[in-house]
Amino acid sequence: MKNKLVAVLILLLIAATGFAQKADDLIGKYRLPNKLDVEIYKTGDKYSGKIIALNNFEEGQTKDIKNPDKSKRNEQLLGMVIIKNLEFDSDEKKWLNGEMYGPEKGMFFHLKVNKVGNEKIEVVGSKYFFRRTLEWKKLLL
Image (tube, rainbow, N blue to C red; front, side):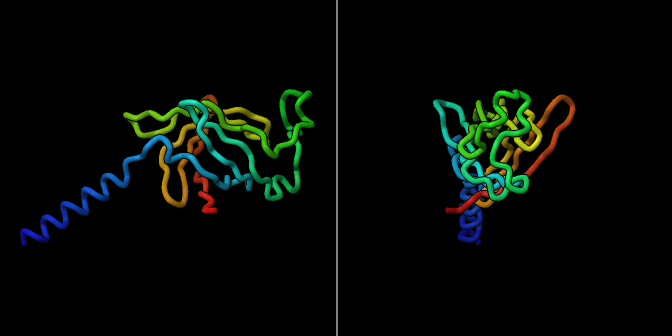
């Protein structure tokens, strides 16, 4: 009986430490629901993300044609930094205060990442009173 209790406690301890998110857990490559592949990387003490593949985004769109700044509508989407300033909050174990640009609508919105798992991450985008929670698939390359 004592051995079983010790084994259960060890398993619980391993599980608890396995779920504790660390700041750099976010680093990686992800497929967004709009088909774009984004690589998230560290810039100083914050995190950024750039488009690394288009995957026939918006039926073949390759330029930033919906950018609200008309002078930027000829810029290529591939390589564009669309995520900036995500910060890891060690108390909440979340990435907060980010900004993301959505080229399908030409809009900027606030971004936070709630959970990072082995196969996906949970992100929340918000603008004004609107908020949307999405899952991004982690690309295992």
